Length: 487
Image 1: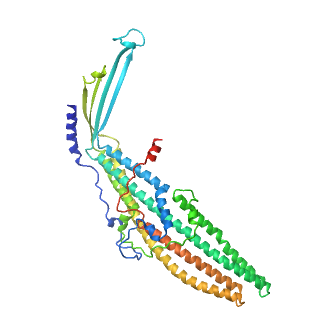
Image 2: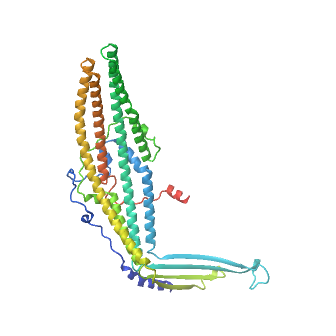
Image 3: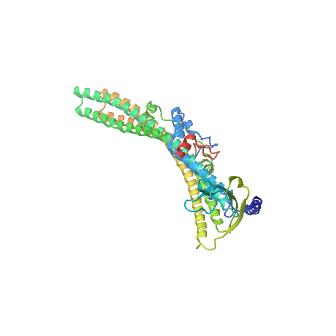
C-alpha cells in the first residue's frame, strides 16, 4: 500500500519536471567571436593535414620515441588525467541527485536489571527484555524547475572541459619535447662548427708562429691568431651547457631524472627538418582543432547552466518520501507488525535579503566572463597561427640568405688562408674572413633550428597533437591507483 502511494506521488511529480529554468545554451557563432574569413598572413592553400601525430613529419625516429614516452609518462599529463577523473566523478555525483535516495537500518538492543528488583519478567542471565528493529527510508527531491538537471548539465560541461584541458596538456608536452629536441640538436651543430673552426684556427696559429720565427712578420700576427682562437674556444662551454640543459629538460618531460636521456642524445644527429609548408585551412577551423578553445567553449556551457541552477532556487522545492519499519522482541516476530509513513513537503524561501537573486546575477556575470574568456582564447589562437606563419616564413628567408653568406664566406676564407701562407695578405684579413665564415655557419644552423621551431610552433597553434574528432574521456582507474586511494 505504501509503495503504491509513493508511486502515485512520483507519477504526479515527474510530469512537472518537463521544464527547466534558465537559458538554454547554444554555442556562439564564429562571427560573434570575431573570427575572420582568412588569415592576414599568406598561408599555403589546401586541406589541412591530419596533425594528430605531427612530430612524425619531422622525420626523426628518436624524436618520435621521446614524444611517445613523454605522452605516456609525463607527470603534468598524469595530473591532468587525475583532474579529468575527478571531474567525471563530479558528474556521477550530479546525476545521482536525479534519483531517489534509499536508506536502510537494522538494530538490536537488550535491557539489563543491574540493581534492585526488576520491572519486568526476568529472563536468564538477568536480561529484562530484548528488541529487534528494521527500517527503510526513501526520499526524493522532485526536480520541478530543472535545477538538478542544470547542475548535471554544468557538471557535464566541466567534465568535457577537463577532457580538452588534458588534450591541451598533451599537445603542449609534445611541442615542448620537440622544441627541446631541436635545441639539443642545434647545440650539437653549433659545437661541431665551433670545434671545426677551432681546428682551422689552430693551424693558422701554427703558421703565424712559423712566420714569426722566420722573421717574416712580427709577433703581432701570432698574438692576434691566439686571441682569435681563444674567442672561438670560449663559445664551446656555453654550447655544451645549452645541450646539457635541453637534454635534462627532455628527461624530466618523460617523467625521468634529468640525465636519463643524455646517452641516447649523445650521438650527433642533424636538426630535424619537416615539410617546408603546412596548409592551415581557414580560421574557423581553429574552433574545432584547438583543445584550449573547445575547453573554453565547454566552460561557457557550464557557466550558462549554472544560471539555471541558481534560478531554480527562486521557486518552490517539492520533496516526497516514505518509510517503513518494524520491531519485535523476537527475531521471528519481525513480520507481525509493519508500520509505514508517507510524506510530501513543499518549501519556498519567502525572504532572504535578496541573496538568491544576487546568486543569479552573479552566475550571469560569470557566464559573461566565460564568453569573454572563450572569445579571448579564440583570438589568441588565431594570433598564434599568424605568428607561427610569420616565424616560418622569416626562418626560411633567413636560411636562404645565410646559405649565400656561407658560400661566399667559405670561398673568402679559403683564399685568405692561401694568401696568408704565401705572404700575400696580413693576419687581420685572415681573422676577418674566419670570423665571417664562423658567423655564417652559425647563422645557417640557427636559421635551420628556427625553421624547425617555427614548424613546431605552427603545429601547436593549429591544435596538433590530439584527435580532434573525439572528446577525451577519463581512463578507468587502474588497480595501482585504486590501491593508492585506499591507502
